[in-house]
Image (cartoon, rainbow over all chains, first blue to last red; front, side, top):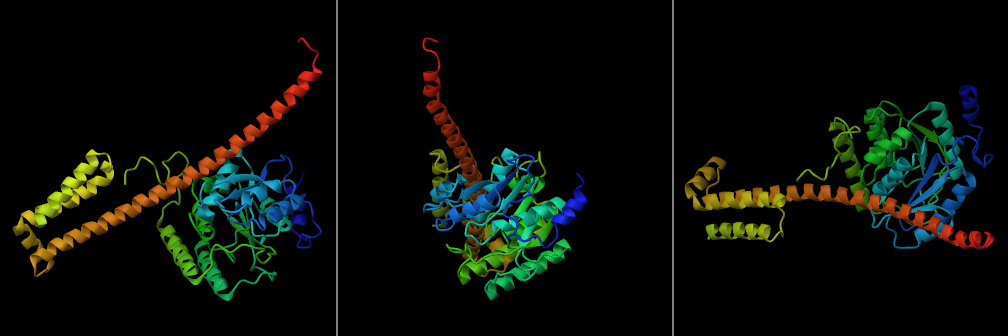
Length: 279
Length: 128
């Protein structure tokens, strides 16, 4: 099996999600080698549909919904739709929830993890594009981006400004084009999974995660994907106060993160925050 | 008056540690700050020297300055301790969720086995 011509064929842009209901691109040698992680906080309206869409479009994927301390029926809806559910005892925020998914994948030895939002914003049919690039390019993290080409997504102007600012900064820091660092539609390979299982930013993690990956000498690529408007629920970043906090927090994380020699300890070293250190 | 206050603080901290209501690691900074305030309150010459070197006209204000500095230090110390606790509770929550999922999975398998067992037994020859 020669990988290159096959991979090149896969990478052709003619491969639209609509003509591709099943995903031959996803490695099938081990049925349980790919995990879809759906972090959900009070998303009972949409989480069931997202899980069903994932199972229909990508039957090779195991689906786990991370119920981030929801107060509604998110976990029940997810289970009814046939997903495995990790129930966090209280709300950790998106960073802690996604990291629980990384730990789960790391523990069970999954080769790939694809992160999909529970609000229906991400199209499971587009996952094949992420896998195609991962197989072809070998990058450790593949991000679905809304901005690299014309897509159906229109964010409010204020949010786009913020995203473009982070994109500009990260592009300079990584010395490679980054267009949509806030996108949560991402595919990670084994190396990225084990890095993030050990250390993942607390809140609003996407931008910081890109930089962390770079510090670990891992690579990231972007793939243009189609995204939908939110199907229900509310964004975790709503209101001008929260947006401002988001901007400042991420900027602080970026610049302080630059000062770290290594984002996290290497395996075998003590953890970033160790229980025995007395503060 | 300042001496009485500093002694009172010192005794309160020691009593809390004795009752195990305050852990030693958190008490150390409190002990240090109450001892310094006590020393400056009792030893007014030192306070005057400190006030002069800081350019403070009224010596008692230097005592306030030192006290406020220690309060800021304690607050920073608590923020650091809180960050650590937040991280630890996050790790615990994730661990708990992973373990809970495993238990539920094991229980489901167990139930399936239990339902299967009488079925199997009824098909086996009796007496065996």
